[in-house]
Image (tube, rainbow, N blue to C red; front, side, top):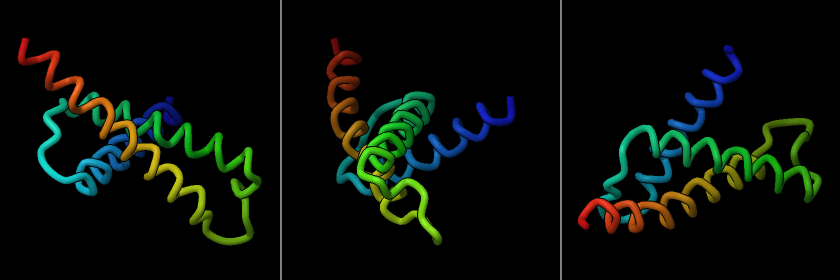
Length: 88
C-alpha cells in the first residue's frame, strides 16, 4: 500500500515539474498530471535499466533526468489532446 502511495506522490511531483518546464497552460486535471508523472517515472526507470545506468554508486542523475524527460514528453503529448476532447 505504501509503495502505491509513494509512486503516486512521485508521479504528482514529476507531473507538476513537467507542467512547469513546458510553456503555456496545460489544462489537464491533477489526477492526469499524477498519472502522466508516474508513467514518466516508469518509462525513465525502464530506459535507464536498458542503458545500464539505473543503479550507480551515487545519485542516479541520468535516471532522474530520463524520468523528468518522459514526464515532460507525456504531458506535452496528452495536454493538447485533453483540451481538444474537452472543447467538443
